[in-house]
Image (cartoon, rainbow, N blue to C red):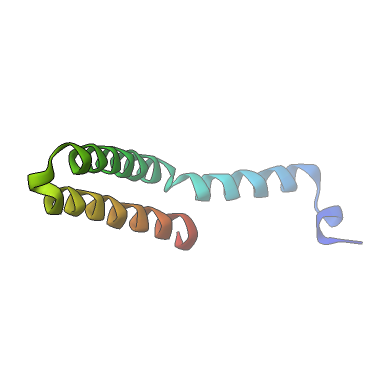
Length: 79
């Protein structure tokens, strides 16, 4: 008999609820960080291809976006 068969249905549902609640604590922050990443990446790419004089600044914006994405990644897998 497996562990899930030994638990009552109510206990199984409660365990699932606790697990979802734990996972959802970082969801809002992850969505916010992902939105910032997408905006920085789009702005940086448009700026990179539209202005030849400020390519380093555009790459800096893209790099900051990548750092934000890395933070979001760690929130997803470490949190």
